[in-house]
Length: 310
Image (cartoon, rainbow, N blue to C red; front, side, top):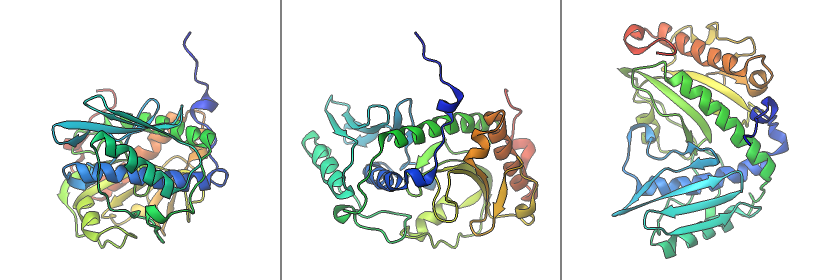
């Protein structure tokens, strides 16, 4: 019998305060696994070689090259386990349960070793202030399975809508992928023109990496579980460089607003979840923000876009 996914299950409530400790722990675990991929994979522009992808059970690194073999790291957010699978049949499993970041780091590195996949990584987080080296992080140790599953279900719905949005563009465009640095699901469109050098300044991230990411003009959108000035889950959209008039553009739907401190449009996740048609509301946000960036920025829209459904 095929299970029917209810709307509330597909778009669950995800109040940040209820799982912020778990989110902080999961973020560090994903950074550790992500850095394994980063260390083993040839560099791609805009750091596309380092990201994770949403799956039908969680998120995956996708295949990571290792000599004549490959392996991948999967986070299963249904059965709550991390699975390492190598192309020669080697497998390791780690239960996802409350444990410190230091213990998780030691366990994952220990599981890779007997598989012949030992990997040396930069042992400290990126894109977070006051970063604690993984091997010394005894602070972050929470894991609430139900909250993680809800977070993943939001990623599933967001990835689905973002993929539909991506299909409307025939210019250079990123995959829909999960960046473990800031832990956001993103898709980025490019105009094809070079951008001015980015000022950098992101905490614990080399400026050369930021400048590679923003080497060309972009219109980017995504989902973020929240933190800091945005203490709730939200969708975002921004342009780099930001064209004149972008901050006052009529971005839809009604719940969207421009947050000057982040230089991004924000749409609270709850505004999408509670909308009569969540898909339509989210697509409207992405599309209207992109149109503001592309039109005000003078992009050659006629050669970059295609109608929905084509």
